[in-house]
Image (cartoon, rainbow, N blue to C red; front, side, top):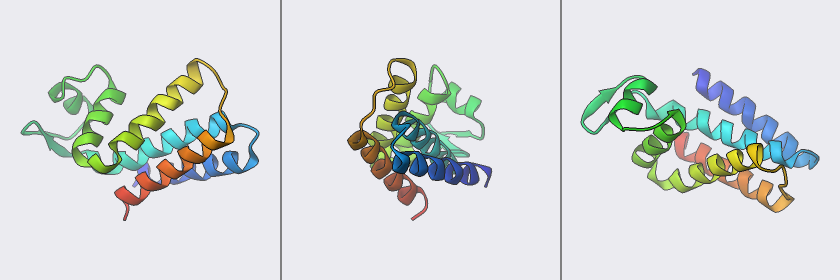
Length: 125
C-alpha cells in the first residue's frame, strides 16, 4: 500500500510540474519515480528463475543484477512485459536528465506523462 501512495504522490507532482512547464526535467524524473513505485506494487513477492523472492535482495541475487534498478527492470520485463520498454525509457531518461543535462522540452515531458499513465493502467487496470 505504501508504494501505491508514494506512486500517486509522485504522479501528482509530475503532472503539476508538467502543466507548470517551468521544471520539465523534474516532471520527467518524478514520472520515473512514480512508475518505480507503481511497478513495486506487483513485482515482489514473486518467483524468479524458479525461486521465491520476497525482498529486493533476493531478487537481485537470483536475477544476477548489479543493483536495485537493474533488478527492478528485470522483474518488470517478467511481470509486466507490456510496459517494460516504457519503464526503461522513464528510468533512462531520469538518469540522463538528472546527471547529464536538464534540457527537457514539452514534447518529451508529454511523452513521459503518457508512459506513466500506461504503466499505472497496466499495474492497476
